[in-house]
Length: 227
Image (cartoon, rainbow, N blue to C red; front, side, top):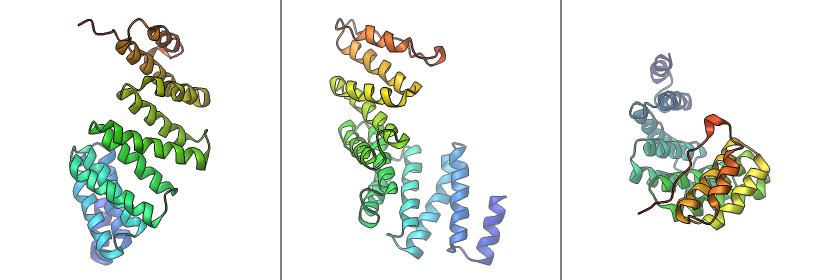
């Protein structure tokens, strides 16, 4: 159906019309939602290329399409090209929309996710920390988006073995949100900490928080490396 609409729009209003670009994007989204990333790619590339040419690099719609192309390329494992688009989109968001704009904060968060996927935990941490601190200031501690950024920050701190730094943030997240995600993050923290420092009592804390999780969400306890 969307492809029929697209063919009609190309014929009637042209390839560069905004409604044509929106239909291209919607087809790309439909394939992306199905996990068919390779099929989504040509649509996302075309809409970005046409938007950049007709609207200009700094138009908000162009910036959005560039950021979304970057996320799609990340899903395809094309990390280098994905980063180029995401970094450029973030720089444009900061310049055109400002550091505190919602799109800028989303771009910061998405760049953090990309860098974590690349194993660049220290760089991911800086992104997540900025996103959390700005969202906390702008939206408040209870904002779902602030809590999501906080969860991403605690996750990357755990990745780096910064357990003592992650602990108060995990507890803060749990005290505010009281979600299964925040509970699971606490279990992950103490299980991983126990693996790194057996005998320090972190396993007992993991078990304490594990007992509050529904059975289907229980992560298996981890054991310290005996080697």
